[in-house]
Amino acid sequence: MADTMTLNVRVGGALKDFIARNVGDDGAYDNVSEYVRDLIRRDKERLDAQQFERLKAELSTAFAAPEASYQSLDADTVIARNARR
Image (cartoon, rainbow, N blue to C red; front, side, top):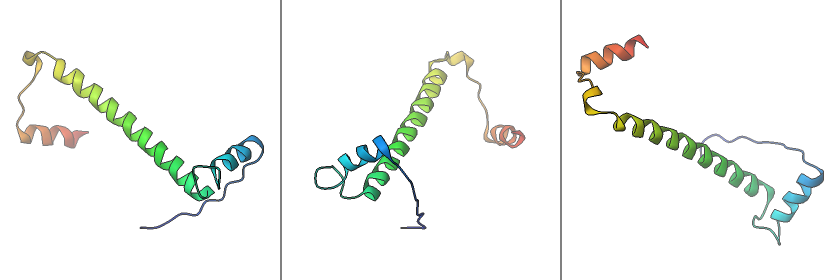
């Protein structure tokens, strides 16, 4: 594993109780660190899925355009256009 990061988080009240129910003998996780890592992984997967869905939507729109609206470009034209951005 590459570099790691240590986090210190304080929770109390209802959040503490919720975490306690999910960790230990009765919970799905052995410890709080395992639980937090899983939450972070799930959040990353959710964001990745959102980005993928946006890309799919953009590509669907692009490919749904009439073929007559497409413009043929050579590599030099594309490189020059991207260099201006």
